[in-house]
Image 1 (cartoon, rainbow, N blue to C red):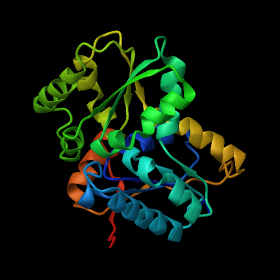
Image 2 (image 1 turned 45 degrees about the vertical axis):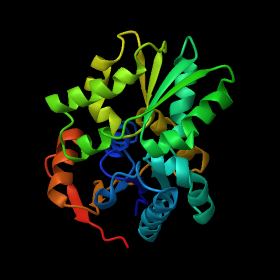
Image 3 (image 1 turned 180 degrees about the vertical axis):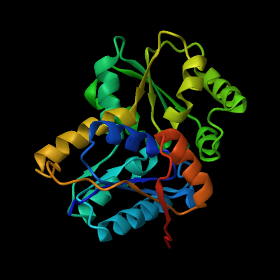
Length: 265
């Protein structure tokens, strides 16, 4: 039997990580949990985020996953180290890969970070960027309106474009060459984000970079699925199935994904 990789997020944002995993890790089986019922995490207390993240990790542990990807920047910022201590499978977060790619790509070391309120307040990205590049300038911006737009399936709408433009106008006058999408929901808004930033600003997605770390960890722990036939991805949501399924079908281009409901305390 193929042991799966578990992926967790506050809602549908982690599907951006899943999309990259399906492309770059075609032999691996995936189980995804989106906590849509309690989304967004960005406005939650650290205690709530930690509790919810542990609950999802425990649910996946019972499903015998071989590693866990915390595909949520807020949960990574708050809960990564605690999850690593509690469970015996390897755990990958999304902040270090995103920060590393930004530092490596930036020519000026002037980097904007777009994230949820909780992620920005945690200073996790700011600290990691400065750790890797001590003289970097970081321009953090919380974007609390973005996740609800994605969760409602409105990420392609004209309204979303207006909301994104208004929020990113707060960065007008700042001279940066990299913008990190510090929330895995944000790649679904990337077209709007690109239009709202100067044309020479390069966008770094933590989702894309995280998959590179997943590949490394699979190899390091000798848990790559080399021969066994992988199973179709399974998607759990704690919220309404219909809205969740619509976004899975659209973003992952799947006709009939395996969507299931999950009750967490």
